[in-house]
Structure formats: structure tokens, C-alpha cells
Image 1: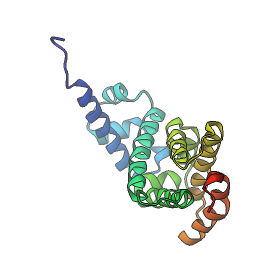
Image 2: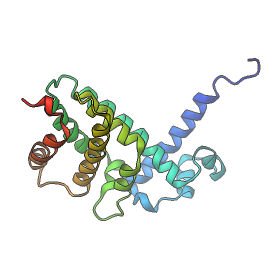
Image 3: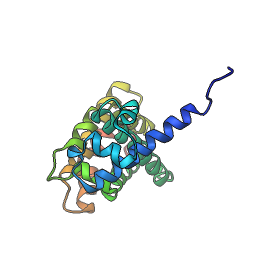
Image 4: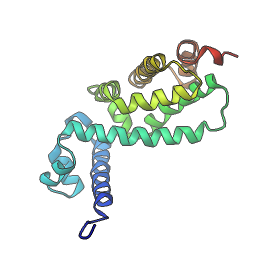
Length: 193
């Protein structure tokens, strides 16, 4: 089509990513619940009107940020557990990797700080993207029952959120809780050793 800006979509992605990067920086410095659109626009170097062109509200921006980071963490987890064949061990490794990666990211860790409102937990519980990624992972472990996979994915997200908000004593303690209480419920029965 003549006159069509074939780079428009890419520019939109770059602009949105720049805004989300600015928000991430603010999330590392301040309580994520206290950051408004004015601060994000200022940090991104754009006007509020430009910001609202990409994100209709602070909640939409938070959701976009959480989904972008969820996809990034999911890719890293899949790379990390690529060689783990046992479904139960893949489940344990993926949950422990998720906990570690969120805690290592200052911007993500801020969403689960015990001294702040639990916006990370609220968003994780409401996000269809996070649940869908968890369900896809659980499906890859071998279960064919889609309804059960969906319920287990929502429960796994709640478990991860709970451990982020209320950590175990240490990594070994969390791993033991996952092995004792999550694997028997979430991993498919056919995956038993």
C-alpha cells in the first residue's frame, strides 16, 4: 500500500518499551504503588499525552510491564531447565528459578516487598498471560486434562506469589516445600518415578 508507514509498528514497540524501561527504573527506586503517570512520563522523557497514547491507565502500564517481564523470565527459565527431563524436577527447577529471578530483579522484587501493598500478588492472580504461561508449562509436563491444567496453573501462580511475599527460611527450605506440597498436586500422576 502506497503511503503506509511500514515502520510504525516497530516504532510503537520501541516507544512502549522505553516507557516500560523508565517505569522499571522507578520501581527500583520507589514503592511501585506510589508511582503515577506523571513520574513515568517525566522519567521516559515524554509528555503525559504521549504516555496515555500507549497506556490508557497506570494499571494498564503495570499490566504491560508485568507481562513483558513474565515473558522475559519465562524464556530464561526455559533456557535454564532445557536439559531437565524428569517432569517433577522440571517443575521444582522452574519454580525455584522463578523465585530466584524475581528476587534478583530489583524492579520485580519491589512488587513483592512485605512492607508494601501486594500489587505484584494482585496482578499475578488476575493476569491471564501469567496463568496461560504457567498452564503451557504444566501442559508440557504431560497432562492432557486441560481443565485440571488450568486449575493447577492458577494454584501454582498462587504458590509462587505466596513464596515471594512470604519466603521460606532459605532456598533449601523452599525447595523442600515445593517438593513436598506442590509437586504431588501439580505434576501429572503419570510422571511419578
